[in-house]
Length: 109
Image 1 (cartoon, rainbow, N blue to C red):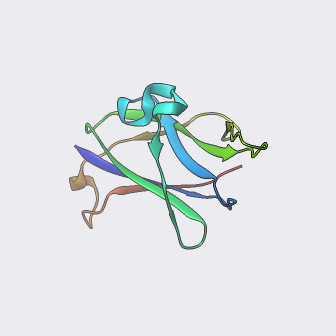
Image 2 (cartoon, rainbow, N blue to C red):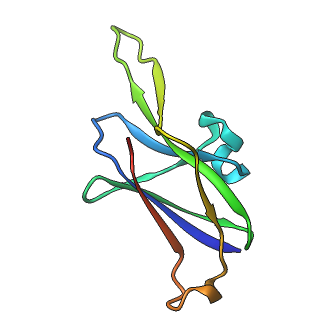
Image 3 (cartoon, rainbow, N blue to C red):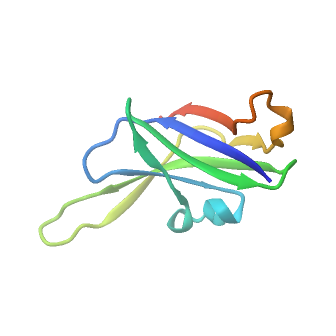
């Protein structure tokens, strides 16, 4: 297995969350309701690290989950990352000189 760390810079509002959805079970098989939850960090960086079989190419996008506050209801909506799908090939740690996970970085637009 190879670990891939996905990082997105995204300025969010209270109650908003960033999720990662894509072409694998770990990413919800393109179902935003089953996506991988990303964790907020300093500098408005959201990240999640996930294992994939070595050699697997994963396609993915980030989705922003927001809440519209309408009286007593809080319906949720999703805003998908603009542009074409992103892709990364999971590589074994032997291909990394420092043994750290492969890190991919994006700006959410």
